[in-house]
Amino acid sequence: MGTLVYGAMASLDGYTNDASGNFDWAAPDAEVHAFVNELERSVETYLYGRRMFETMRYWETAATGPNDGADRPAVEHEYARIWQAAHKVVYSSSLESVGTARTRVEREFDVEAVRTMVAETAGELSIGGPTLAVPALRSGLVDAIWLVVVPVVVGGGTPVWPADLHLDLELVDERRFAGGAVFLRYQV
Image (cartoon, rainbow, N blue to C red; front, side, top):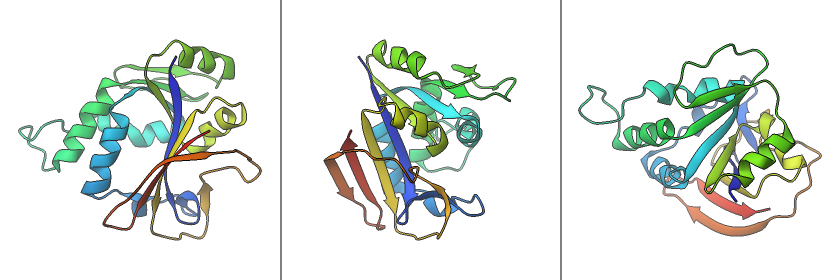
């Protein structure tokens, strides 16, 4: 039986992007990026909505090694390899094709189909994006939450949680980073 994890980077006031849709303030430094790489190394399948997938598909063609001509930090090369190795499921009613390996499109988020996918997976599945996470959180599919809180207040945008969600959580891990970000991991 697998584990479904909702992971996000959020502002201190609880947004994944600001009112203009920007999230450049959440770009991880090398220390946070290396930590996220370790977290995501065990992810076998990413579940994305269209917008999150369109952001993340950058990693499909991102450089995976220092000798490929790309002038990127080693943590980014490593993340590209992690992302490319995992399966991806994109929930979208509008995408016709994805253009990435190991990826399939589903037209709607079916709670029971995802429950079956989790049951049939030995490792972790990660649900990315607050919009897609809402039905998973509401239906009790999410087993764990990891959150990187970035030391910035953006004043509005897309909230990491819906306003009327109630979850009882148990803090199981935490970590502070030199740049001021804080990692929190909860069991649901």
